[in-house]
Image (cartoon, rainbow, N blue to C red):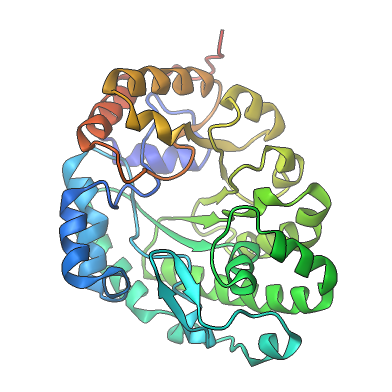
Length: 343
């Protein structure tokens, strides 16, 4: 049985009797109802139409007893008001990458009211319709810069790393603008009713410690600090265990970790923080039995402090919804005792 209060309790650092569960990309291509809606309307229209965004957000909540909903949107959403032309094929593709100082200077920093007002409308509608807490989100400045400079997503982002080394002053100017836009965008979501926020620093892990400390950490810190005292703040950086010493200094309540590191090890490196994660999404492509066994391992490793169960990244398109249903039930059935430690 879903326990809506448990998500917020855990996000504020309480070790709850059962781990609350939500899944990144829980609204997405693995659901037939999502595919049908996307076929009719297209991705970008769904993002920009509040009623459609609400419908997609609630689809998994109707199917599964999840403990939180995450707003259906995209991390690129606040960029068009800055003057960035974006298409999706299927991932984001920019008509003109941002690489020179003049490119950066041309970018606007819109007022909060100009930054995707349809997102605020969707949040308000969801607060009246969702039976569980609503998570808002945004992309972290360094991750947004990755797409702006590269022009699209890649694997290693070598071009971005070279550009940061070659054009540090231009990079800081770009990151400054993106930081201010991200703060305004997240504040708008919180003011509209989001009850937690997640900052997706999806590509932070491709940087070494020095690069992250210079171009990632200060800007993520500014964004999260701007939301202090409002709602629980979740920070996600995929493939970033080498950065945990720095990430531990961020003003966040929760750190979402991927599947590469057991939660019991993460607790020592992220003291005092609630942990979110960290089942390998690939296990959901196997069998319900294997997925549940993996979930039990994660849940045992998550004992000893606040834990929000999630995947280490998003639900993959080929995932069987029945496996997700079994997984969510297994998480709710797993008892936690406050102060328990992994044997």
